[in-house]
Amino acid sequence: MTRRKIIIDCDPGQDDAVALFLAFAAADVFELLGITTVAGNVPLELTQRNARMMCDIAKVDNVPVYAGCNRPLELELATAEAIHGDTGIDGIDVFEPALELADGHAVSFIVDTLLKAEPDSITLVPTGPLTNIATAIRREPRILPAVREIVLMGGAMREGGNHSPSAEFNMLVDPHAADTVFNCGRPVTALGLDVTHQVLSTRERVARIAALDNPVAAATAGMLSFFHRYDSKKYGSEGAPLHDPCTIAYLLEPNLFTDKLVNVSVETESPLTRGHTAVDFWRVTGRPHNTRWVYAVDADGFFELLTARLARFG
Ligand code: RIB
Ligand code: CA
Figure 1 (cartoon, rainbow, N blue to C red):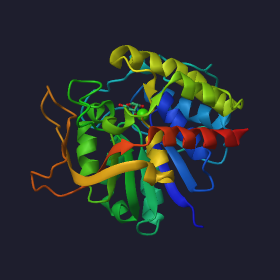
Figure 2 (cartoon, protein in one colour):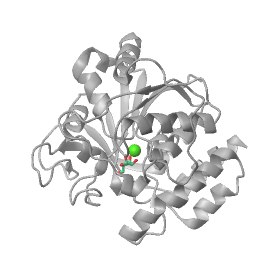
Figure 3 (cartoon, rainbow, N blue to C red):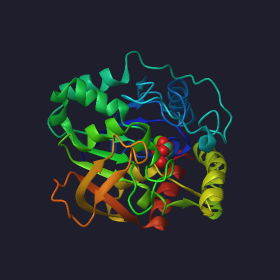
Figure 4 (tube, rainbow, N blue to C red):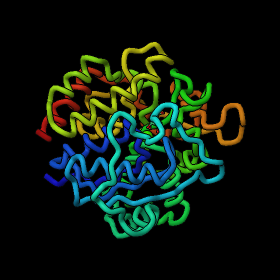
């Protein structure tokens, strides 16, 4: 079976890291062409280092990791050390990765790869602010026909915002980039807080992962044990939402998720609501249906998938 070609664009972040592990564990399904990193949870020099660390932990040395944009298109960078810790991946010991950073800018890698690709052949999987993706599209719109789908983590509807009253973090950091991506004309699937807040890394779920007793599972359990404290305090929830791995899980087992084709528009100007994703769930605006909005998931099925895949590193 032909494997699905993907590029993961991320800002590790513990949950980005678990998304990378899940993708690494599905090499039978994905041809991971490259990992591009962007400033978001922590500054770029840390997100690119953290992505390379995850490759080392998983013993993946054949996937290039690129550094991309170090700040949003128009705004100053806002980071989230309060949630992720100063390293961006608190919960495990940081080390200097053996995997070298690939030469060249992430945006150039995205543009060059897509320009050479067949139509509808590459899936982009952004799990951080959309700065790299939007910069590539704006710089070279001729890449768009090669984009099979953009499966992103971001946005919120019923859940409200997590980093402002009305905006989810990835959208808030770079709303101008998000606006470009949602309106790029290629198929967009968005997994926002409405679905990611249903996949909570509870103690028993983390314990099941820790019991797998392999370095990747141990790193996952360590990061989730740190990552949950902020959300548990904030939402009173038992465990942190596993935001970013939902993108990879959706690609692996879409039947676990429920979505609806609607319009999603992003507020880019208002200082009060910048980054808000206006999800026209009831289709009242007549705006083009530009997004598959994912809003429900079988959470137990998600964790069974994640745990089974992480067991493969044994
Ligand atoms: O709002 C959650 C998103 O912001 C996740 O991608 C997390 O890693 C942070 O980037
Ligand atoms: Ca992220």
